Length: 343
Length: 218
Ligand SMILES: [Zn+2]
Image 1 (cartoon, rainbow over the protein chains, first blue to last red):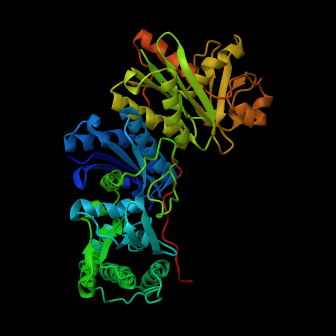
Image 2 (tube, helix red, strand yellow; image 1 turned 135 degrees about the vertical axis):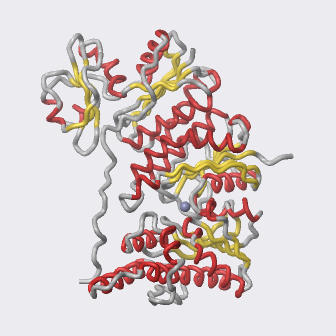
Image 3 (spheres, protein in one colour; image 1 turned 90 degrees about the vertical axis):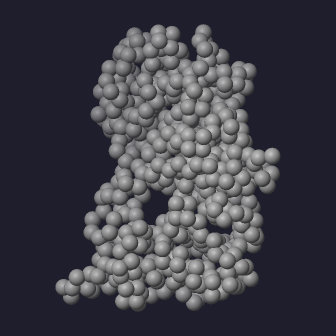
């Protein structure tokens, strides 16, 4: 018997994502991004994102169906990001999903965006062994999670106490005159830089918690750049980018490996937009290898927000026999990771 | 013919079903913060009440605002998805026109104004002839900019004392999907579309381009 065909819809930030998944097979992953419309504002403007979701939603679903070569009538279940995320943006996806479920008479699952970031790895690397540690890093979240069961037993171990890692990338990019979003241009600039040229601080590096802090690092970079400018010297963008990136990757990978060792868990999943960063991936591979931990990182296109991750989690929930969410659940901008399925 | 009509551009979530000869079911609820939770269950109830399946629908009609954006989009995305999934046309009607279609009875032969809440102490409004033909494009402005001396329908005069003081307040307060369904049924009978399901935002998103990064050293 073939597994159910699950349509996944994601609209928590600036990507309108639609994925089609059967079991753990990825059939289509259509994305429409409004990122270019936000660039000149230096950050995602919620109302701009929400308007873009409304325009992109139906065409994105059509594209996903075309790519997968299936008809809407073949969809067996619908999953949608219920939270966390931008309230107005989430609402567009949630209402779209409810309307598809109503039109098709199919079950609807309102799912947790963070759990979906973890679930997506299975589309590439197969079922996730339990327990596992997950490090989720993006513009909106930075957290370490203990995953005992993806469909309903996720415990937060630590999170950022100030800026998310991706936010620090955006702010440092602005300081260096690089475009928004900051991740890709900093990664690119860092390639020709010397990561050891400036020793930026590692906040909460060995404090024994699984929490992060990136605000101090961002300020340290600003201070260094300003001192340089005050002295009438050029700012070595590549060196600063590489040194900043090294500090972020160093803290993230140390905390993740420490969490694995402390919990006695030998599988680590890294996901979220910042998991597309080349230095984070390389350093994580090196440190996990040294510590005897199996590292799983989805390909960059699946790390950033997308609909496939939502479909992947939906597929797991269907397989686990989870109760559908019904038509009256609310989008929840603050949905905690302990709640995988919106009621 | 079976037209499903709804509007979410005001605090009301209103849903109706029209079979070509008349409205066969309708309901409204007022809760400005729960449009996304109320609309889909309401549609399901209306269909069940009429003994209809989604696949029986021949057209979708939706109010296109103006109205607070978050609620407005609930109706628009629902309409576009239903239209796409069921392969039926989706028609959009200005929310002020829906209110006007009902208000013309209370206006009793006079020209009148429809004004709804635009938040930030402003109103969305338009003026109408005695038979509910819109005389101008919908606008957003302070209540003081609305012409005085006309009867005013919609939530505007109920929220802004200044607006209530310059003209008689008439019904209704909120749009009714029953009126929307009738407007679209009339258009379908004539073989024309009232308009596309495009949002009438009237305002640009609030966003400012950042200046130089703030200095951290004194
Ligand atoms: Zn995300």
